[in-house]
Length: 153
Length: 283
Image (cartoon, rainbow over all chains, first blue to last red; front, side, top):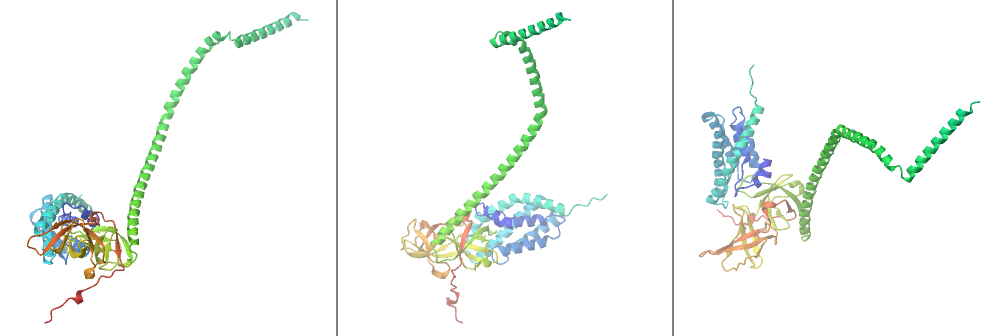
């Protein structure tokens, strides 16, 4: 969160930025041995909602929806894999940004849909996809360290 | 009595003394130089040969110790250089911060009627759709919601949310920001609006008003959200849509929002809440 606010948000591509919180939550959710995914999604969502000026609980709902989808994918379709990470990041970014645009338009904020998609959503999607793999590898190593595989002798 | 042996000894001694004195005199006269040269040269050559070998052997045995000490000294000097470079970078950073603080202080002194709290900008809103910044001063430092935020260059925005040790500032480029301003030369009021791209523009300017490029935009004080006469920016482009009652203008902000480091919060300005004065429908 600190890195997101202090560094990442100051490195835009057009107007889009990497959503580090989303990437970490999705990567953590896709780890096979992790069972506390929804708790972390809740904590991350509450933190971002508290800090950001985005109306209501938009980002909290978005993060919970994205991580739920990631968990479904991890359990039903693919085992933990890089492709699942890319797919969940793609869809999760669209969910988060779609909710943000919808809430802002509904609340009367002066933003244009086309401009939002071209200048914010697409660049953010590209940046998130580029950062997905390194974040996934980091989270996989962390999960391996926290949940070591037991060796039967 | 044995006189012949003693006289022979005396003769031998005398002869020897004579020879030595003669040799000395010859040597002092320089007559023995070729002889001394021929005698000493081989001795000198032998000594040189031995000395050279000895020095070579001594260097061979002592050089590793010298190299080790040289390497240690080099490493020590490199550590010192690194430390000094870090100090230089730190001092340069402090000098830049001092320059910023000096500029802010100089500007604050030109407006002694206001009270200020200086704060560092520590982050931006994680949502890319919003233009908010975070500062490291909060309610413990006398900051309250709605207080205007400025730098020596002009208006930044106003306090949107606070806690004990930090605050969130809505800057004027935010899409939902609206600032009542006036044009210095045209002497007319308008509304400054932000946008998703971070550009700011004036709206609701009557068509009959003559806008000029370079005209300074200042806060008007209308609405009670900001003090009067804070510099906002300059007119760079004017749009006059045909058939519209109002014209628009693009504004170049006087503050560089991409490199904000330190801001001033005006703490003795209380924004006026006009909500109770707004007419409400009577059922």
